View 1 (cartoon, rainbow, N blue to C red):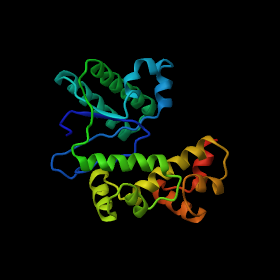
View 2 (view 1 turned 90 degrees about the vertical axis):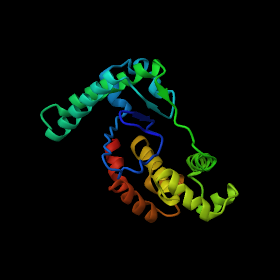
View 3 (view 1 turned 60 degrees about the horizontal axis):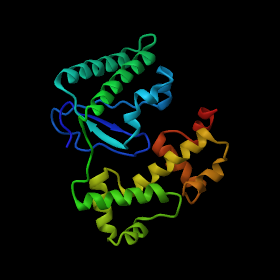
Length: 226
């Protein structure tokens, strides 16, 4: 359960979606930061921020005094992004790094709560997610994965959406596109090889799903990576 003032740290390799954000008086701030931004601030960033790399996800709960500081940092980040004054990106990054350091200090003080599967059903879906993450390059379908876990396709479809916030196909496509983006940015592999490597049956389908997920054609990320 996430409470007011909690900070959720999630690894960039973990696909996730927040649900129930329609609750009244509910507000959240989402900050995406690339590891290269951490390195730009200080070459020894891994020594300072090491706790962030030790788990895939966790909740940090800070003392009230630091919650107030985090609230101030968060509001300043929002203000910088909205106003876009000269140097706003660099300034926002430094604010985010301050926020991460505060989180790390509290982690070292054991003010940390790992996210746990609340039920056997959640644990089963977590197993399915791990299976997809490791086998996305193969010909997966709702039917075949349901058979792998000895459940009905209806059960898998219903509870996968309930637990993850994604449909089975949405999650599978997002995992495949995430891996395709990595290959486009970090390798010279051609698109007509990448689509097969990440599990798509045709380059046409790959291109259509890629644009639906990212808003861009695959070659946009090839140019971006150069």
